[in-house]
Length: 439
Image (tube, rainbow, N blue to C red; front, side, top):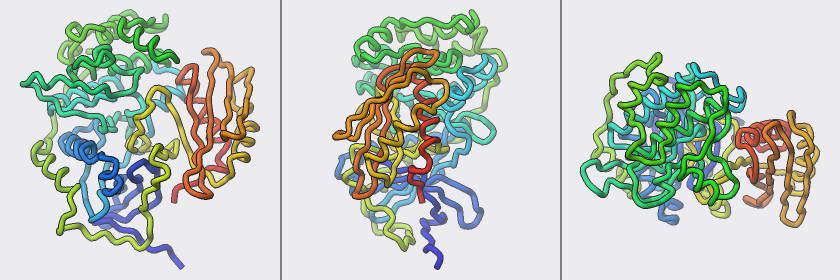
């Protein structure tokens, strides 16, 4: 007997790619064209319970406003009585971060090509009154041609150019990438702080590691405030000069996008794009507002299975299946952004999971002096190892999601973020037989 078809509007729903606090992401297929899309499915009740309505409305408004070849495209938004369905362009090339992990670092020609695309996308967003506020390699996806697609507008803010209130006051973003003025939390121009984040990204592309990366938050912030970093010797002098202009701790002296176009390093091979059409901002706001209300004109949502119950016991975590093409589109848990973490689900009991991690960790390539320490009562294991970039410490812990289903979470406690990412990718591959697959 075949499984019942699940359909939303013009889309048949396929396998689950990942889950978040307020819903999940599924593959969708257009019933007429066969085109593949990613559908973010959000639970209205959970959104209202957690008072996240304004955040979701803002995300929808921003994504509807922006239409550019270097930004993940919002195709349409649908709603039923209990769900919101955000239909997104399906991105097949993975994260730019994975390219850096695989290569160690990028040559200047390749890094410059990616950086040009990033700047074009950011410039377009800024021209539409939108600043991103959480730019980092993990939020830069690649399409099948290898072109950058900026994703995750969950922290975006509409920029009001004409008023003093245009200065943003909420500290957002991932600490390693945020600008000094954001750290100081005295009000900042989101457009100018995005430029700083672009500078950190360029440094990571060329160096293969972060310019500001300290385990202690106060030390990290002090380095960011002073722009205290060192470029490795293999970065050319013109590139170093350009990075210094991007990472100016004084926002008034930081290079603008217009000024970038005259920079000797940046302008090599740069070609202007014509802006593409965009949705009307007020229309986008009206749409977002309407979607969070229970209306009498809801779409026909044909679902024969009970597929979308929220997992209240997991509301402290989002569940992200690693290695997915649209991982950066999932709702992010911003409660502890300092440490990059990775998760998967399993039906294997916590003691058995810890035992497998202990067995498989020594098999991860390019590590030495690896040690593990297990705390069985907390279902936790500490893994420390040496690489060419020094010691890395990783914590793995198993949490109960629902009876019989567990979340295995890895966190970097110390060491190089690229080396940690490489470690997780390897051990995730070694543990494939216990990883629950999305259906």
